[in-house]
Length: 100
Image (cartoon, rainbow, N blue to C red; front, side, top):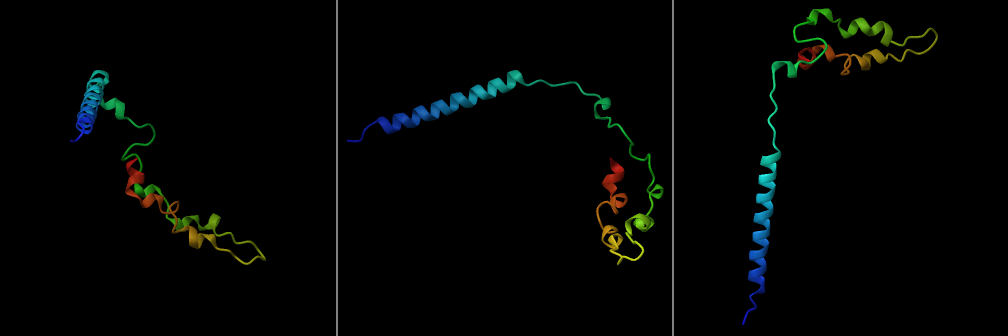
């Protein structure tokens, strides 16, 4: 003859899970608050979309004067060659850069 305890435990566990889930659902509904929002809540300070044109940025070649690292009597390291392909050099080409 089988013992009725395993079936009783399963029902007890299922009931406990149901009560716990219901408690969390009710508590979530009671504490949920809808805040009124206006377009002013989404204003980001700083330059806005369309404030700057892409023509106002120089190409990465214009930066070679500072980033060339050429010193008299020293073998040139030419970091500009590696820098001109970096994220910093190409930042003005990114559409998200202008969207922010």
